[in-house]
Amino acid sequence: MVRTRPINILLIEDNPGDVRLTQEAFKEGKMNIELSVTMDGVEAVKFLKKQEKYEDAVTPDLILLDLNLPKMDGREVLEVIKSDSILKRIPVVVLTTSNAEQDILKSYNLHVNCYINKPVDFDKFFDIIQKIEDFWLSIAVLPTMME
Image 1 (tube, helix red, strand yellow):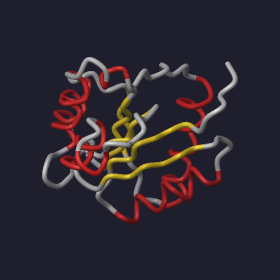
Image 2 (cartoon, one colour):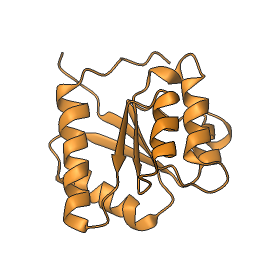
Image 3 (cartoon, rainbow, N blue to C red):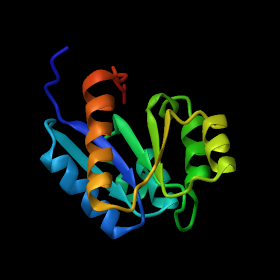
Image 4 (cartoon, rainbow, N blue to C red):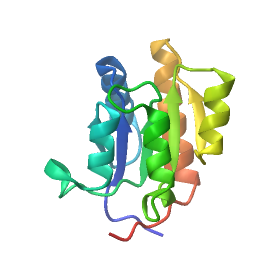
């Protein structure tokens, strides 16, 4: 299938440095990506449900989710996504510094598609984003979201 539109990714991340690194890594990539960013869990849910200022938001093809977020943590956001009949089809990649076994288990119990420990090293972080692009946007077949 030839993709005629950009791939829409929602990054749910409260660390401005990680947001910038992710933006830069995707700019260096091979794909045409539109990256939207929300900085807390409440805003992420509003974005996904097209509420308030997000009523014209495009449903993402892929979600990158940090677990440790203000207002509503990533575990709660994941629960909202995976309990919604439409949103649950969007692949969610947890990208977090937490390597706690309970976070890993809870994420998979909530049907996360992938759990990745966020490296603190710049080059390794950049490499992880490139690998996410390579797998999720080049190899994996993503569902076509019907609005």
